Amino acid sequence: MRHVDFSPLYRSTVGFDRLFTMLDSLAQPDGAQTYPPYNIERTGEDSYRISMAVAGFSDEEISIEAHRNVLTVKGERKDEATGEGSELLYRGIASRAFERRFQLADHVEVVGAALKNGLLFVDLKRNIPEELKPRKIAITSAPAKAKQIEAKTAA
Image (cartoon, rainbow, N blue to C red; front, side, top):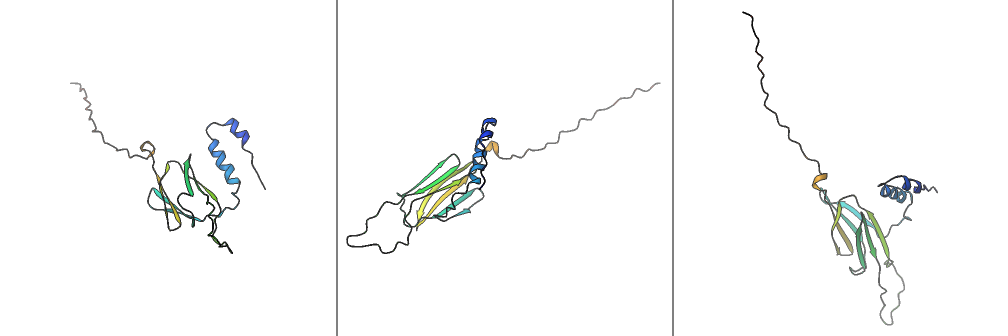
């Protein structure tokens, strides 16, 4: 197991702390977290959708938070009491709490979220500010001014 300590670099650099935090998080696997399963799809040129399978969770039991380029989806099931006289013999539907984090790129915002048929859909959109977008510079041709050279002739 290898671990690189970036703390000496924090003292000697300014503004690169997020970069070192990302490198540090890449070095440490998240414990092979596989629950809940999810898909990430591109739905347009600047829009994305995260689909998560959260069967058995209601919209009150799921919280979504976006903070500093990190999208956090948490789910916590409330203990549901089984009916009087009934006993659970086998539990095949997962009801454990989860927390899933997604690292968002710069200028990606959460547009909305919807829960439908056991799937949680989180819609994202990349909004690049106008000053960061490439712009086309028009080339104009200036009219050439003709200079006339007069020669003096000796008579």
